[in-house]
Length: 175
Image (cartoon, rainbow, N blue to C red; front, side):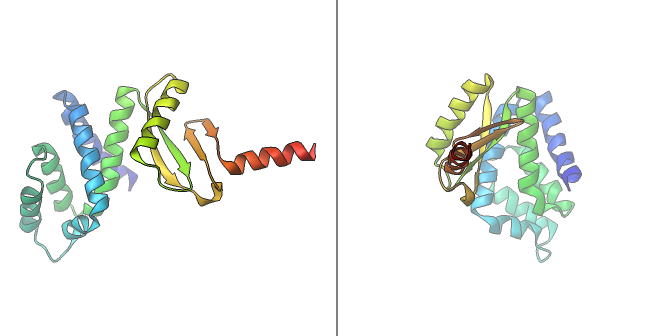
């Protein structure tokens, strides 16, 4: 499915790159992704076989009034091709394309609990300084860490988890 979702993302990326609207579109896509994740019923309605394509297009137009027309058109095409279940993945692929184009490294932050926007922002700033490049971190819950966080960006792992410290302590005691 990666190939399918990346095609839609690449189409929007090309369109917005040519019109120099990548940053604004990326912000809007991030907001929409957040809204769709908080309201999964919206995607269920768009993927429903009980609604006609015209009804789905009308729902998109009526619900997403302030959203960029190109994004609404993309959503309509996605519904037309019965791919509404992949909207979140398409948004993620678009975000990755824009980040790659802008030189922003993407990484994962593993923690035992969901980090607040403030915590994630502070961690992102610190990692950006260490990496000497802007970064965008996504929070992943990992209860095996016991506490603390672990950040993974490409080949670099910054492990400040309690689990890691306990393993280090165990190794030094065994020596």
